[in-house]
Image 1: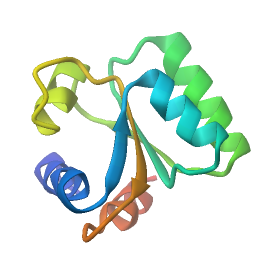
Image 2: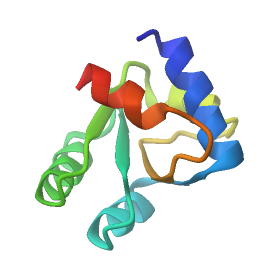
Image 3: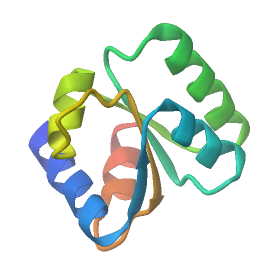
Length: 104
């Protein structure tokens, strides 16, 4: 899967579904069992990435590591700031869950 496909699906999630941006809200979504997919930026700080991966594995939630930086992930979300992690709560009309599973 190309990163352009993934970015397009991510933008569809943000328009038609529900996702939460940032480390704290991603962790909260995992712990509360609401997250269906966790997306991490490639350059997310290691302690953040390890903690999110650990809790996601306990909850059996797939983790997708985005090939770009946190700046690129923020730009993909049309946000003017860095985004280290995203929790997809409702995929809406996108097939992002299938795309992420295909690469995991």
